[in-house]
Image (cartoon, rainbow, N blue to C red; front, side, top):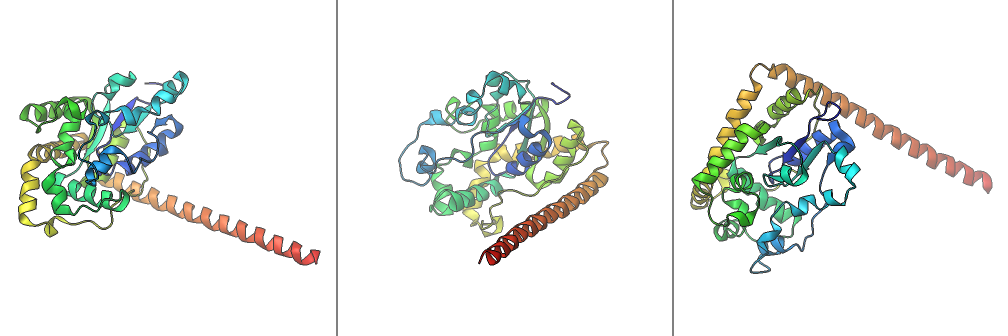
Amino acid sequence: MAGGIPDLIFLHHKKTGGLTLRHLLREHYGDALYEPMRGGRVDAPYLRYLREETDSFDVGEETNGPSLERWWQLSAAERERMRVLVGHFWYGVHEQVGRPESYVTILRHPIDRVLSMHAHYREHRNMTVPFDRYVLTERDWDLSNGQTRRLATAWLGEHIGDVTQTMYDVAAERLTEKFLVVGTTERFDEMAVALAHALGWRSTTYKLKNASEARLTRSQVPKELLDRLIARNEFDLRLHSLANELLDQKLVGIDVATALQQHERATRVNEYKRQARVKLADAMQYGKRASEAARRRLAR
């Protein structure tokens, strides 16, 4: 801990509401928060593999390396100043950067996560593979117990087969013992309350970020595909249930209802302020244009 701010690592699973939490953390820690380089290459080997443009990809790419590329470009002084690290990390990144083993994460119901991942790849990564083939070919390793795998192993190549009971046990133990707060996408507001209480924040304000608009719902998925996804995500389903239990434990003794009311009130105030800033900027721009027009008329 430095300056009263704890070292914290946000292990961000894809499509769990992580960008919203990143925004919340950024609001509190500003430039003391480390984020990977923005934007990913659309022609990255794994994305090309998902789009069925290539038959294989380098498993070694699925490590913490890409998320830490910017980290190693920082000076030693800049790295020392960082108090919160966020990224699509695999568990164990704390050892690579020499930080305390203090994590926070969000888990999502695996079926909804798969639906959201497919929608995201379709909307933002030029993927035209239909949902049924996306599920049945299972080229995306995240389709089958991906959250458990990211928590139980240090990289994809550490165990390229199916997730096992032993891996689930490791993931569950780490969630229980090494995470300051574990939340779920479905209970994001409550998770934010628990995190604010654990970190001593006075308030929380945020807006949902990066939501996939046009995605299938569970009720629209054919039964055979839904059954397959449930069978292939047995451990993620159990881990999601555990995450809800851990969140319940973290909320014991907290007046959640009052905290949520305070959040809603603070969010409304911030939105009013934002709208006021926009109107002021528009008024200043209008005044500038009016002044320039007046000068041109006088110069004629």
